[in-house]
Length: 420
Image (cartoon, rainbow, N blue to C red):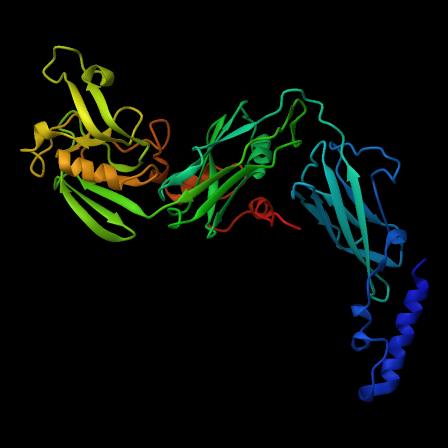
């Protein structure tokens, strides 16, 4: 073994320390052999990649590192590519073999740091580097994150739209593991598959006020199936504002607006009348429009019926794609605070609607309680994501095998640090 002279030196040093006793030291670092600089472990390990011949590693094959010296063992292996993506792996109990358990990316440069120890416990180290070959697929899977970067309220989910459907659960797990969302301050969160091409990410509770949220894809070069590989995608950065929550009580005909837990206004309102009851539940502000022309035909009301309407509406804050707004309704001021007379929207005076319009932002929360209407849909009509409890939300993840609060091993691996 090339490092055997070092071993003899360490043993001699140890014996000298024993001979000197408490009255002296030798060999530096307090005489501890484990504090010595790690030796070159090249002769102790081997791996299943090219040995400096310029060839590239097939990303379809798992990475294997083995101890080739009977007198040594592997203690740790860290493999990471140039983008900071870690490769998860397993080390055998006897320290003779480590193999990757997550796929390698194609067209990537990897650095592998291997730690070993010899029969005397002296540490060794070897750094390996290699490149992987190009993917075989021509049309990669890409991700478009949403919403557009900017400032949003605490209720805003992160969305991920895939350019191709992914139905297989194992393939979904590969995709989901590569979609990273980080926030400062950190919070517990999870992805939920809405359908084969769309995922939503939200925390267990609302985002912290003034948080910074970043989403990125690590799918580039990752094999998803024999015919599908991941491609590059644009990252997303969101800034979260104050915690603004507006609670509308349909039975008391009032809306109470809170900012950071403190009540800042209470407004008389009217909500949906019988047959047009406003949806209960949590909705997220989708946008604001100073002027909207509202027609009953857009929500299925026939022209000429007693319920038909065609009105100019101002200070309209949208909460569903099907046409539910919080808006100015000067024609119903006499009913606001007393009875529900709208076709499903939340109406208020023009001055109150202007105040609400100025103090509410995209991503803020509007919650309706005590209405006889249906519950807000979790998906498809805006962001009703918060109407699923945490257990059901986590059940929509392809990574989380159970719906307990403790993360699964796959989830834990996905949340490894992103820097060496």
